[in-house]
Length: 141
Image (cartoon, rainbow, N blue to C red; front, side):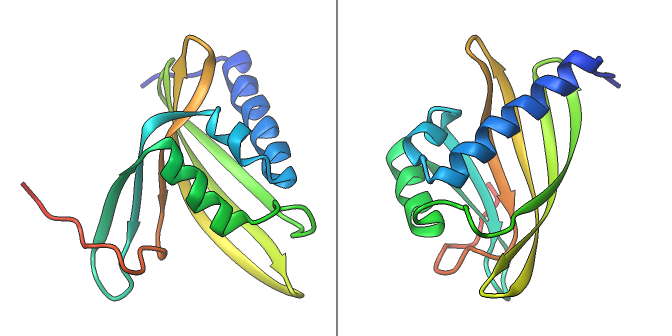
């Protein structure tokens, strides 16, 4: 099992600090610059099964525009992230987050796969349950 060194853990924290700052600003194009495409997106269909897609950069940008609007500023977003290094170049980051919308707290639990590229860390897979409305269920084979 790979054990990251302090600098590697700090590099993940720094990457998410950049990501969070861009998300707060609603800088969706710059968020896309932090990704590798095609991006794997994994969720589930309510009252159904898992659903899987691959997004192009354009599809990611459109989905983020719809979900983030002008950014996350004012949502009182608090996140606890747990990185799990599979190797020096692959890390699954599990996030537990709470945000406040219209005075109500909403909790989220999701994971991202980050991959080390020549330009630094990038996210390549997003996994979060519950938002596959209208998606086809995943099929084996």
